[in-house]
Image (cartoon, rainbow, N blue to C red):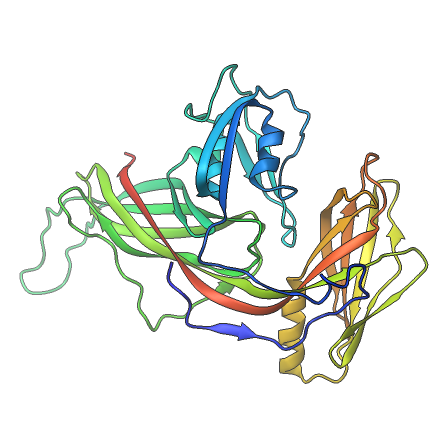
Length: 386
C-alpha cells in the first residue's frame, strides 16, 4: 500500500469521566497498511458463531437466528477480510449499509444456503464472490463492468481528412466497492478511481492516466461498510473480448489516531467532559419509545475562529460511540445527526431490543488525526460484455 502525502492533524480531543482509568484517555494509532490476521478452523459451525470468531462483536448477521446451514471454514493466518469473504461465499451473505459512524459489519444472506455447502462452493448470492483485490485492511470488489459501443461518423479534421471507415470502439465503465475492516474509519473518498493499466491479452494499454493537476473532489457522504467508486476506460477496439489486466488505485481519507473516552449515560443527569481548554457535556439520556434511546454530546465553539471551528467540527463528526448495557451487550447505532446552530450537538439514536438493557457505558472514540492513503488494486482476465 502506498502511504499518503498528507496528514490532517487537529489538536482537540475529548476526555471523559473514567469508568476504567487505565483505558480512559488512551491514544490508539490505527495501522492503515496492515491487515488483521485471523486463524479459524471451524467444521459444521453456525455462521453467526464463525462471524464472532472472525471479529468478536464487530461482524454480525442481521438475524443471527436465521435458518442457515452450518458451514466449514479454514483460515490460517489470513487477512480478516479474506476470512470474511469465505464466510459470505459459504452462506450467500453480503455486507449491508449501516449508519456512517458505526463499526459493525452486518451481513444479510441473499438466498438460502444449500445443505452441505462449504467455503469452497461459491454462492451466487454473495457480493464477495465477485473479483476482489486485498490490500492491507481493505478489499476492492469489482461489482459491475458495462460496455457501450460508439462509432465516429464525422470525419476528424486534419491532414488526409481521416478514415471514414473507422471501426467502432467500446467504452467500458466499472463500479468498484471498497470494504474496510471494522477498525478503519473512512471520513471521505475520491469517488473516481485512478486507472493505470487496462491491458488486452496482447499487452495494449487503453487506460488514460489522470492528469496530476486535475481537481480532486472529496466525498464525505458515504455509508459503510461499502464505499462506491467508478472508473472509465474508453476507445477499446470492438474485437477485444477481455481485459487481461485492470490495474489502478483508490484514494480515501481515514482516521489514523483517536483517543478513547469512557462515558456513563444517565437519565436526568448531565456529565462534564473536559476537552483541553473546553468543557463538552454529555447531556441526559433520553428514551425514544420502548426500543430506542438518544444520547447527545454538546461541543462548545468557545470563541474558535471559523477555520479552527470548521476543522474541529468536521473531525468530531467522525467520532465513534460504542454503547453497551450493564451486562456488556452491545447496542447498535440506528441514526446520527447534529445540531450546528452555534455550538455543535451530536445526536445518536441507539436501538435497544428487549433482550438488551439500557446503555450503561459508552466508549467514545474521538479522532485526533486523519491520513490520506492510496489503495492499489488489480483485477485479471475480465470478460468484456457485448
